[in-house]
Length: 218
Image (cartoon, rainbow, N blue to C red; front, side):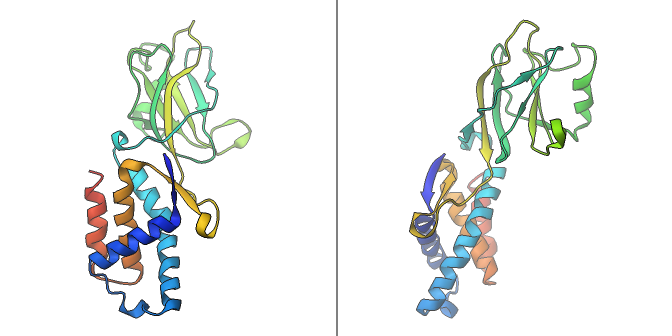
């Protein structure tokens, strides 16, 4: 992921609004331009969140999973994720034949199969399964974890490859404010921000801009 200046996004979004005939006549004086900048800035985080949640994982790079995995006696295990965890992208434990890129959640009916006492029913290192669970960590923590099924009895629980998407957050203030984005979906983020801005000021072009953003991440 790369750190992008919020001011650069605001400038690019204003260009998109102008190119797509969004009516900004009501925001022409200096004070109203400051108001427009404020509206755009407020739409950046929800736009990044939508795009990062809905883009195919092949378009996203994310950040590395840095938490140490915990292995249980039956060969299963889990990774407690950081507080900023939003979406998993890929996990491959050492010894697995292939990575997991499609993650189950704990509402999936097949999740119960992973707790079977019979190892042949659970995921294995040849056909691994990962489940994102919520609120069942030690001490009542609601932080999410990734449960993995399974690794060999003699294998160490180490991560060969693991990446996730964090919740978007603007860091810094004024001209130094930045937000982390995946470069391959930057254009979609601009269009989504423009669409949400147009929607806020009740312009009829809003949906077209939002639809363009969605098309860019199909």
